[in-house]
Image (tube, rainbow, N blue to C red; front, side, top):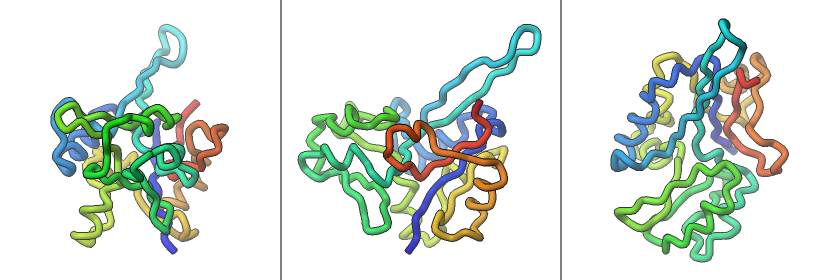
Length: 183
């Protein structure tokens, strides 16, 4: 079985937004809708300050609260654990947005539906690339996409090497996105 996941090195992210733009282009999103959000914070003390940028997106949780509350099953999980969105079934109630502890769901005012990052599964399945556009666009190599079930995969090697972990593990959602470099 394959369990897709993503590794993001927050120390390597420079906040250039190339991943966001690639994602918007790949998914045909309008300029005001993005599956990737950037959080910036200053660390250190004057005069040794630096800005850290942390990109967030759907965490592809194994125990996805968004799928549990969707009344139309527009949000659902496949056999591999991937969290998917069928916007044709979405009624725009935003229950999934309220249930997501990461607040990474987006409401498209134009369509009235809710959407989210899909790890580019539609394009990966049709093109055979198995790669997310945000990973390909990352100028610093801060992102890696791969199979979390393969202990020898590049993503798992990097997770072990940099001791990466999911955000907000205390929620018990078991996310598939791992971060390194967060303080």
